[in-house]
Length: 400
Ligand SMILES: NC(=O)c1ccc[n+]([C@@H]2O[C@H](COP(=O)([O-])OP(=O)(O)OC[C@H]3O[C@@H](n4cnc5c(N)ncnc54)[C@H](O)[C@@H]3O)[C@@H](O)[C@H]2O)c1
Ligand SMILES: [Fe+2]
Image: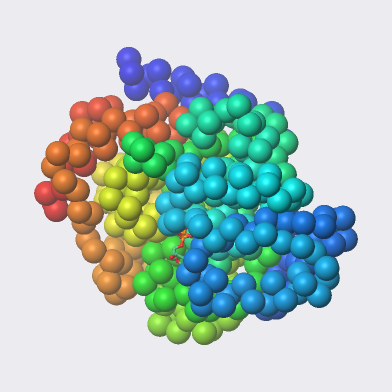
């Protein structure tokens, strides 16, 4: 009965998805494209912006070109570099205060998913001053225009620059959850590969695997996708197959970096409609509880969840196997397993652990939060109930 309820909910959502006005941000791409941002902001008539970023990026001087160019273009800015990895509602409130106190008119979200999501959270709180982040988590609870956000992704992973999601952790409870609202779709994304060239190999691998996870989960899901999302998922998977390991070995290869930025962008757009699945539902709980970096949680769980879906996912995984050309022939099952095998091999080659660290006493909490996130919303190939989730999380905690 419960599983049927989830499927009916998803069927209704599918109809809703056709009615929504989906859009994509305008992109400015290529090496040094960051220098085009300040003139664009000036052209749009903004005189003061809040830059949302994190301390590491300031310390490694990644913002220097942007700041210089803002000065040259006489655009005033306030720098907020207090965003944590896995940003919290407290980070958001700090940013809201700076935005208001300084009379900012728009935002630049500069960094990985954490600064981009934090900026979206700030935008949502500016638009809905009487609604807490917790009250806006879920689907379509902002419903007001937020200040304009120019995104500058410096990881090639989350795709937050083209999604309607902002994932924020409640500092007090460690509950990590997503605000999903069309108003959070950024209007501009600067895809400058030079900004990702200094990403350490480990972060390159895990954030790239997050993008892979978006594409694979959106593609293996059942219902919300249109042809556009399916095509974008395939393109993203192929770009990651061709470029991720090479970029891990040689981070300075700008062509690979650019391809991975595109992959993250395509995969982000694919899942923002096609939805993610149980890798994300479970992985978010590890970020909230243990501070596990998002990409790492995704990389660890992705092949396990795909295996656990079993035969219901074979056909679509086999199609992805064909897109990459991993094997020439074989049954759907063989191709699907070859595709999962490639992900496992990539994990091993890039030093990603096989299993997550899960404390036994947290299993019930993990299951409760994962179900809350995943059901009935995520149109996964197989619907899991509480017992299914529990069995899976227990297996992960036992390392089998
Ligand atoms: N909104 C969405 O659609 C969406 C999708 C997936 C994930 N997320 C969320 O995004 C967050 C994760 O984002 P992330 O994986 O991009 O990591 P992140 O933004 O947390 O960054 C991880 C680390 O890498 C560093 N870093 C970033 N760019 C760098 C660079 N170019 N050079 C050197 N260091 C750099 C950061 O300073 C940070 O220490 C999580 O909270 C996750 O839940 C959001
Ligand atoms: Fe993700």
